[in-house]
Length: 119
Image (cartoon, rainbow, N blue to C red; front, side):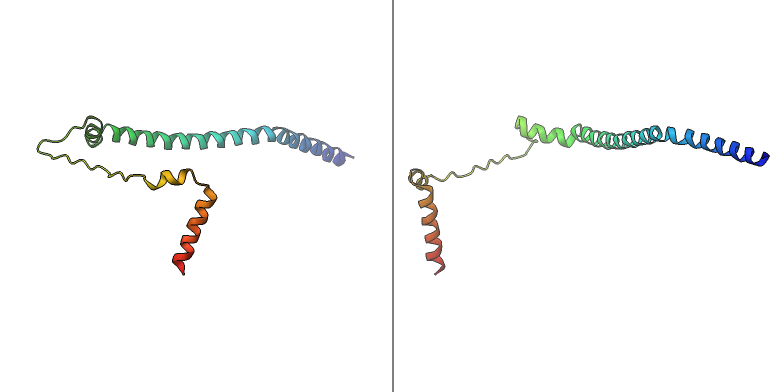
């Protein structure tokens, strides 16, 4: 009888301890998930901060300022020659005639020309 009461008492204590562990498990799992989310966000923000620092260093560098002065203010170095290159615009004579024509007929003509060249 005495060992039976001890076994029942130990069983009750075991069940009580098990209940204490199990009842807090969902809360611990949620806290763990939130902690992982915060760690991920922190890593992302750390990468962004490093990228922003390198961009700030580049934007404050002498080469970037010189490049922007050349582009925006049309400045040049002493003794430097500036060359402008202009694109030659081609007249659009043939396109105006095609605007009034049916797109299906245009495609058909192109197709026939391609077939004629292929043979």
